[in-house]
Amino acid sequence: MALVNEHFLKLPGSYLFSDIAKKVNSYRVTHPNSRILRLGIGDVTRPLPQACIEAMHRAVDEMASSATFHGYGPEQGYDFLKDAILKHDYAARGVHLSPSEVFINDGAKSDTGNVGELLRWDNSMGITDPVYPVYVDSNIMCGRSGVLGEDGRWSNVEYLPCTETNNFVPELPKHRVDLIYLCYPNNPTGTTLTHEQLRQWVNYALANDTLIVFDAAYEAFISEDNVPHSIYEIRGARKVAIEIRSFSKTAGFTGVRCGYTVVPKEVTAVTLTGERVSLNQLWNRRQCTKFNGVSYISQRAAEAVYTPEGRKQVQDNIDYYMKNAQTMRTALESVGLRVYGGVNAPYLWLKTPKEMGSWKFFERMLYECQIVGTPGVGFGPSGEGFLRLSAFGSHEDCEEAMERIRKWIG
Ligand code: PLP
Image 1 (cartoon, rainbow, N blue to C red):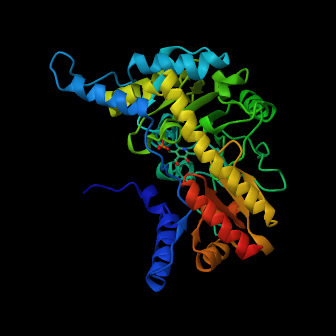
Image 2: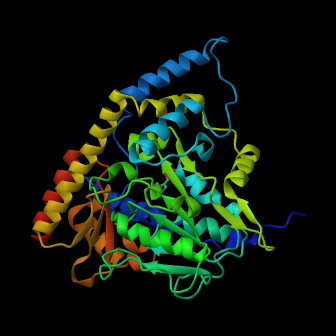
Image 3: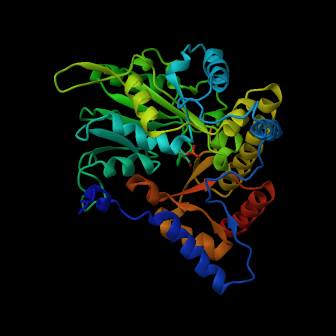
């Protein structure tokens, strides 16, 4: 008889997107002729950059001949891709890492979830609230989150509210934590930390021997100079931070699957007897056992992101989405709504009018102007009273949606 990992049974159902789908579906059935505009999705809609398409075609052709065929690749990723990452994403910003500190992944979700395996189950942890749900759920799975309280909070998780009052900049934890997840630019709020604000987190981690998991999946959307692209731009961060990035939103790879995780050699955790262990070594060991690398074709496509044509095409796609974000911000503010984000991230965080609850506002927007957003409370208790809007749709839909909202609210 196999005994189940009972921590899995504590997981709340992932109701948010299925609840949204159900509500949208029942609206569709009763209003078959209305055109619903979806601003809730977190998936990209633009096709892959041409440079990536061409690189994939070439890689497929290589697979067709025994002379150029590629079977298993290095678990940590091919050097051609790591070298491009190190040169363009890091050295260009004054950050010098070695190839053995970069691990190519199949997108950021797996590694944001897996990285906790390197740590004992009884570490304490902190998360910003609202938050990308994978951080909490993956810790529930190994028993690290504790038990769920009646207020919807987990007993072993320190929640760091990101609200209008603190301008969505979380305060440092009141109690010391061993592990903290930071995601900047942020999903869902679309807000960022400046160099100075991130420095306070790094200093906290250095002073408290805290490990930071820094999710920079939306790094490519940063447009302001005072926003760091990598946590390693902050002095001392390579002692305390693991950084995770993805080509999903940067280059439209949500269906291709490729990203990377940086585990610097200096990052350590301690044994119960006080011995310091390099997490780079442990992560390498873990990957060699549990992961057989990302496909050669996907890695060649990712490499093409860094060619001159690839960089231009990636930027064109990002500009396309950020034009939507700008359109939304302008329109929503023009009717007196309060809205955050959308400057360095493809998400807008809309304050519901008249203190309306997230779900109530979601339903009214669906029924009164046929627009779908994502209720903020689905990302954590501090998301109540907000709605997340995504800039990943088409210009046409985005403009029409804003026109409808202008008429509705205005
Ligand atoms: N991290 C954040 C904050 C995200 O919003 C997402 C996806 O929406 C991911 C990670 C995962 O992206 P992927 O696994 O496609 O790289």
